[in-house]
Image (cartoon, rainbow, N blue to C red; front, side, top):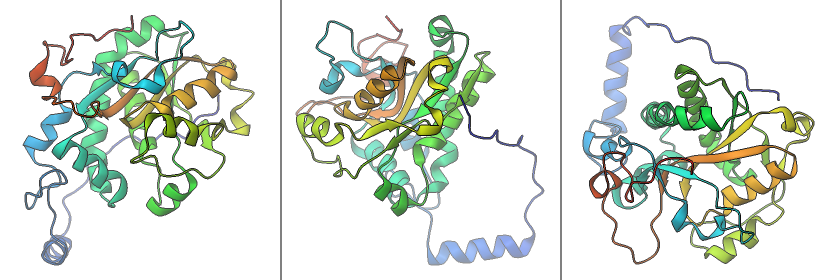
Length: 278
């Protein structure tokens, strides 16, 4: 399968000149940096809000009704790092929709760490290698943001898997082929209808999908699972094997009072202790 070009290796950069430091300080006076989660001054993401993404990945698909295939096949395994409430939700929304690309590094580091933790499970389930596929944004969202946030996560996930000895590459194989409504605020049924027929495999990837190995989907938030279910369907229709998905955070069902996954569960970070593929 064609892959996105590899990123050049990181290199140690010299400290910025004094004039650059002065300009940055002046810019912060005009547009001060604050924590995306709680608003604390002078830090992109404070330690407390960042800790929401530090736990071990936990299985979250049980609370996503659109992932239930209703054909006797278990729902797609989905691993999450955080619970999408409070400051965690604010962080993700700021990163996606409020031009907080300065969070790319910290959130990328979080999913990279999660990929390393999941590498043994994915190695056992993969057909030689893993193709990391970001969930596609709508054309309107892509134009508004000027970028594809899930592609940032996918690159970090692939890097984490490779560092753990699992051959992995990113493939932007999916696209939204028609205009869809904003998923926010829609019911589970409405989300599914909104995406029906909207997600497709890009033409240039269609011939290569069957030989792509095992596919791992990557998205920002799991709510009803409609987006991941649509992505799973079209990839499987193209003869790809989809083993699971990794998300930054999962939204609890309405009315649920949910403590953080790290405090609620066992050492794996899962609220129910469930971590593996089975």
